Structure formats: C-alpha cells, structure tokens
Image 1 (tube, rainbow, N blue to C red):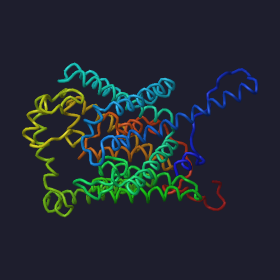
Image 2 (image 1 turned 45 degrees about the vertical axis):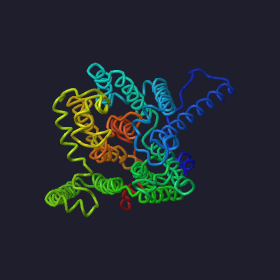
Image 3 (image 1 turned 90 degrees about the horizontal axis):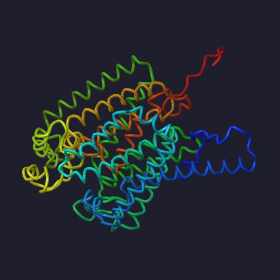
Image 4 (image 1 turned 90 degrees about the vertical axis):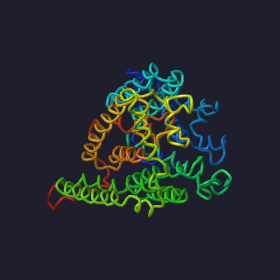
Length: 464
C-alpha cells in the first residue's frame, strides 16, 4: 500500500535543479539526472521513516514493554531514543540548509513559529532547570525543522502521499504486533484487551489511526478510480485499529473531523448556502453545548466518563493558580514538571497524583512560556486558520482540505492532551508543516475535483 501511494500518478514534485546553463555531455547529464533522482528519493524515504519514528512507534515499546506510561522519562534517559531523535533533528536541519531558499520562504509564511522557537530558547534565562530547558529547546527546534522541511520539500498533494505511505506502514505493523505479538501489541494492564499496536498506550494508537483515516479519506478522493481501493482499504484498516484500541477520545476527534470536513466542503459552494449552514451548525452546536453544560454529570455518565474528567478538572484549577504566579513568561520551556524538586512540587501535592503534563495544551504553554508564548501561538494559529479557509475556497482538489483539518485536529486534541510545542512529536511537526504550507500563500492549481467538487458540465453549444 505504501509503495502504491508513493508511485501513484499525479504526484507533485519539485523541478529538477539546473546544474549548469551550458550544454553538457550526454554521460554527464545522465549522471546528474540519476543523482538528482536518487537524492529526491532519499529525501522522500527519510520523510517516511521520520514520520514513522516521530509517532513514537516500536522503539519505546520494545525498550520499555507493554503498558509503559512513563513516556517522557523513558525518552529523556534512554540513550537509544535520544540518539535516534538527535539524528532525525540533524538530518532535518541539514535538509533545511540544503533547501534554504524554500525553507526561508516556508518559515516566512508563519513568523510566529520562529518567534516561539526564540522564546523557548530564551526561557533558559529564567528556567528553574536551565540545562534541561536548553537541551529540550534544541530538540523542539529540530522537530520544528522537520516540519519546515516537509513544507519546503513537498507540495501538499505529495505530502499527503508521503504521510499515507508512513501511516500505511504504521497501520500494518500495528495489526501485525496485535495479532502476532500480543504480549506487546495488546494491553495487559489497566486497559486489558485493548490494542495498542506498535505503541505503549492504546490512546496513542487511536490518535495515529484517527490521523490515518483522515489522510486516507483525502487520498482516496484524489486517486484515479482504478486505485481508489488503496484509500478505501486504508480508511477501513485505520478505523478497525481505532475501534480495537477502545480510545473514546480518538473516536470523538475522528467523528468531529469528518463532520468538519463536510462543513468545510460547503465553503466551496455558494457562499450564501455556506453561511446558512454555518449559522445552523453554530445554533445546533451551541444548543448541544448548553444542554451538556446543564446536564454535565449525566452526559459524561452516558459516555462512561468521570465528571471530573479523570481528575483533570481539579488539576486544572490547581495549575491556574500556579500560572498566576508566573503569568507572563512562565517557568521555562519544559521546566515546570520536575517532580518534587521544581515548580511542580506544591501543585503535585495539591493534585494528589503524579502527572507529567497538564493534559491541556493551552495550559501547558502557559506554564512553560506564559501569556507571551500562548499569545504568539494563537496569533499564528488564527492567521493560519483564516488563510487555510481562503485556500479552501480557491482550490478544488482534496489537498486543499489538508491544512484546515490539521488545524482543527490540533485544536481538538489539545483540550485534553498536551501536544503543543512538544519536542520529538509528530503532531507538532505536522502543525508546522500545515501552517508553513505554500497552499496558504498562493492559489493552488485547479485539478481533479474528485470527491470534493466536480466541475459543472458546460451547457450545450457553449465553450467550456
């Protein structure tokens, strides 16, 4: 499946570099062409492998075993993992340097990302653990460089195919681990029986498969009719693995993404219809939210959830007070959760249970970089979302939906998880790739309408 995706026709590629303006001997021209082709292939292979590994697949599961929840600690102290990610960062920075013009153009589309990197590095000055902040800030810089590389190297249509290839490998290997290596691929702890595939937790598998289902749905719309079985198979496999993971959060996010895709699709129709539907969706959504708010405990009981969101609500109240003590610049990048030896000591006593994150991306940014960091993120996010909606209106191909859906997924997941500004994390790299995408800066060339929009047939007698 992965090979079929990368070899599918219609893939956008960068023009071959002109090595010389003068006429070259045939043998030299052939060698240069072969080198350029091999180099582009190596870049694509690196992207697929890096996406696979940055989703936290296989390596941590093999090293730590099934049911390991100490992901952060394991990554921080394990030489193999640190070397693996440092290698990805180094290669990413090297590729960004090789394509420096395209990379500068990509990051120039979203200067707030660069400002966030500078703030994270600067936070070493006021961090409770300066060495830790510096090391982790550099890891964040490397993760961001990978996202910039994806935006600079691949056109949106080609990036979808690269992601499809990596996610196909993740889905197939997760299925193989669950069936052939159930000791690792199936949880035997508190979530006994839930599939976790090549990951250490069922929720990680659910999150990655939700992304996979969305990517394969977009790919299916763009593939020729004879190859649409690839996209259909990918969606079906990802949905199956998501259901076997029993991750309610991932399932809810995927349903919301599919609903959002249908709503965004209307923006490509007549604007008056889109506005009417949008207003209707706001009214219905607002009514549903009011109903849930007035029947909070009963609604969560139906979903099998604790009204305190498994202790999150009381924890958030404690963390808000901690934010109030360092409101503007926070405690330094990745320098709040230091156990009993750092700023988290008193909050952890009040919370009453060990937690490595705030389980909310926006609160996490406030803890680390304060109001300044959150403001920089929101400025970039809102600007990118506005441009993504504009790109959606200008395009007719499925890749036009990609940036706005990634932005929507980022918003949804960070309500109950902390994946904003997260080092060595695929979610942050894809966010950077989406907000720095060339699709947001210029109209995309119209192509096949596919599932999203088909060109209307011209009336008889009129030229098309």
